Image 1: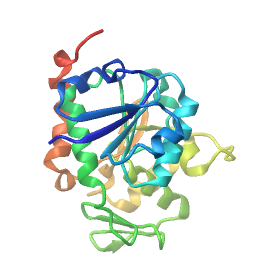
Image 2 (image 1 turned 180 degrees about the vertical axis):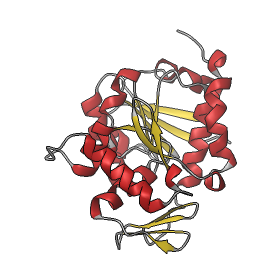
Image 3 (image 1 turned 180 degrees about the horizontal axis):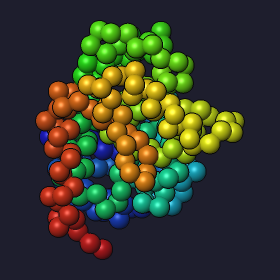
Image 4 (image 1 turned 90 degrees about the vertical axis):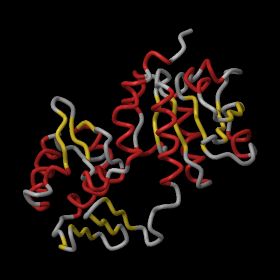
Length: 244
């Protein structure tokens, strides 16, 4: 499937930003990384924002794009800049410049398939788990979960970014906020309580990544073939990435 990609960058050649794009059939249009050019660029399926050098400028641009339209926004970040990317950016996906073609293609297809699939009432469903943001309630197999406000916010945040690993410090920032002065042990306590309320059959939804942090693990029944493909895509395309 070929898509229209809009790349916001100071580079004139998309291969200088994401080399593997040259191996894919997607049509890439490059425009300067500034708000005026981005908002007047016309129709496209996905926006790619080059955040390799100017993280602050890219963050502001991503926030503007995510708040002014319904087109998926992808940030292209060097590995060293990953720690600075947070939910505040408003991006739908993050890619490294070294990402291979199979993984890029799978992630783009997944983004486009997800866009517009969120329930109109603001609910989020992953397998047997349903999170109702408007009423601050969560149900698992129809059973209401008795969650505190922070437990709900933690579950919602992790579920909204299913599969992505967050450090304890990142979770403190995103869920508790900048003005929270407690330690990272707070996250561990809330995760333990949340797992207890999910029950022994479902506590594995909140996965631990040793020496890093936590992530939401999609139940196998909720993993689409395309998402399963992503788990191995980056292992099959390393040799295909052109070097510069």
